[in-house]
Length: 444
Image 1 (cartoon, one colour):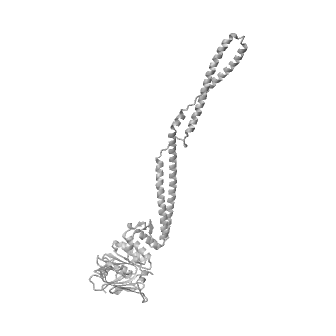
Image 2: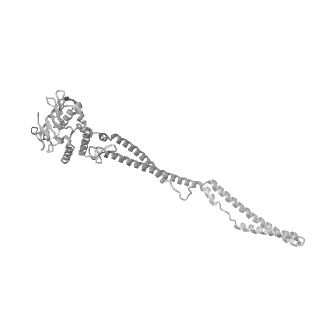
Image 3: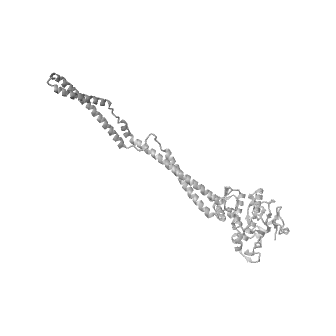
């Protein structure tokens, strides 16, 4: 069972003249009144009584009072806490009658419960760290956050490189009409030389035809001259005719071969040799484009793999928080900041911030069953009622202040004294152990 405040007596502290309060055991006890009447002084008094000298107001004595401050807080476990005298000395008496000190109070009083603004004014990271610490996953989540950030930064770099590679590849021209491999000037020149050699051979054969024609003419003339001497030269003629016959055959063969010969053009090779650097430049460009596109595909693959790893880490973080014993449904930590129902602190309403703060502070020290809340006027009446019902369900006691004199107030203070109450107030004289309604009374 958590410890709560059963009864509070205050005299001459800041703006409070004299006041007794028996707050409701669970839910809201609202101290109402106009500005400057002593509402916040009630909370400061409780914080001083239970929190020790570090919570002592800078000017604790009520202005104009001849008496010293007096504080007495009776806890639900029977513990009595009293501060009185010139130095406001602390006296703590446990239910058995033994005396104790601040150390005993510190064992069950959560510092943030009596100083809620300290939590609410903390940085978003500090709030998140507080939540992670109390649910016991801070160190593990921190490692996941580090891994996530490392992978995220790596993926961002890979993404930038991928974009650069894709842009570079897209800007490069491509020449589909050139071969894939570079052209060799030596091979083209060798081909040219082979063609020139064949053409030279053809020319030689053409010259050979002329030679045969000249020889044929000379022989024909010689035959004509020798016919007169046919008898004398019969044998010579016969031999000459045979030779002539062979020459004739050779001539016919040579003419036929010459007619079939066709010279090959080297013009295409000459042009290819002249254009070789231009073509090779295009081939180089095509190779560069292919390599750039391949690089882009590889980096895109790495980017996708890192994205998958980020998604896995996100899920692991989410599972870690989903399985944790969170003080309030909807609480989480995203990107190192506290969130509630997906909203970061600065996007929460004032009522949501109070609810979140209250739940987390309660979880810090479960034995502390109460919390002090200043300036509840930021809640409308409907939200105030819902907040009170939530406190009751959580078996949590809240003593709060509100600039109001309406019926939602449990106690109304004017000039440091109680002057009225809401409809649920019961005077101290009529209170019974069974009646847990808030009570009030004027001066001691």
